[in-house]
Every structure is written in C-alpha cells, then in structure tokens.
Amino acid sequence: MRVLVVEDEPTLAAQLAEGLGAEGYAVDLARDGVDAHFQGDDESRPHDAVILDLGLPRMDGITVLKKWRAAGRRMPVLILTARDNWHEKVAGIDAGADDYLTKPFHMEELLARLRALIRRTGGHSSAELACGPVVLDTRNSRVVVDGRALALTGHEYRVLDYLMHHQGEIVSRSTLIRHIYAQDFDRDSNTVEVFIARLRKKLPPGLIETERGLGYRLVCPR
Ligand code: CA
Image (cartoon, helix red, strand yellow):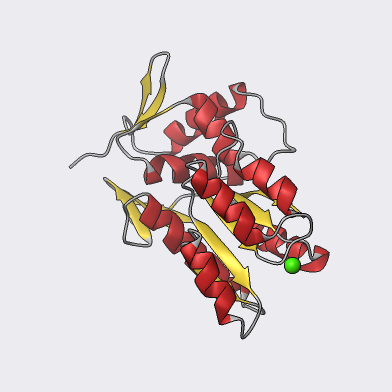
C-alpha cells in the first residue's frame, strides 16, 4: 500500500515515514500544500491513503483536500489537527476527510486508523483478510497459510497485501508497481514478476493467476 504523508514539521514527518515504512507501506512525503496537491492529484501515482496535516505552508490542508475532492480524487484522507481546534475538525470532515487525529497522537493509533480506512475503502470490515487457506493480518503484517507463518520480504508482502485487498480483480503490473514502491525507488517492472514468482513458490498452487497481457488475479477457493 502506498501512502502520501503531508507534514511540514520535519521531525514528525520523519517519524511518520519511519513508522509507516516499518509497517510495510511505501511512503511519499510532501512538506507543503502545493507539493501535496500536486502529488495527490497525480493519477499515475495513486495513493491508497493520505495523512494530511492541516496547517501547511503555501496552501492550507483544507484547500488541498477541497481541490482533490473537486477533481474527483477519492482516496481516503486522515487529517491531523491541532488540539482543541474543533472548528478545524468540522471543516476538514466537511471538506471530505474520512477520519482525523488530534496532535499529539500515538503512532499505534494512527496505524490502526489507517488500516481501518484502507480496509473500508476496499470493502473489508475485518483486520484479517482471508483467501482460501491464506490469512493476512493487516494489524501485524503477518501471513499465515493453514496456520503456519509465512516468511515474506517487505516487497513480497506489499504485493500480496495489494492482491488480498483486491481479490478476484485483475491487477496490472503497472498498478502493482505504483502501489509497492515509494517515489524515489527503482521501479523496474521486471521485479514485479520476480516478486510474483517468489510468492507463488511460497503460497498454495493456483492462487495467483496470470491474465496474459493484463496482469494478475488472486483467485480464492470457496
Ligand atoms: Ca503543520
């Protein structure tokens, strides 16, 4: 999953990037409203969720959010608001925010709210995603097959996580690339094939189908 973090305070931005990275998210950072608007509006790099501070240089967070929504950008947005500023929360939710957190917050709470937002967007209400014998727990990034823990690298996990959130759908290679890599990383599309091949070796046979010329599909036995 790919997350855009918009935060102008360098220490907090670094903490967010580190905490999210450790949970397996690909993280893009924006430090002012103009850059945030540009990155969130870039359809070639869609984000699965956005963490948006409201007090930002160059363009405030509410304006950024209104512009995204007016342009039809529908990714879930969690806003960060100053303490005791209920006006800001109301304005943020009216502008299209899906959830909010008041500063200062605990990283664990932010991570839990983010997981819930991403789940709800994908139509899942549980923290555990299942596909046949495979169970992926989004709370601790663990994958279990028939009760046995599976050892996955970060990238393998991200690929499987995306497919589990989109079971039954055809997911193109370019979509996977956009959702597993942060902006600064090497984005060689051949590496997706490598991750898929490794996942196939670790997962029960037949789970990941190749749709020739289109992409991959996670097929879950009933
Ligand atoms: Ca700020």
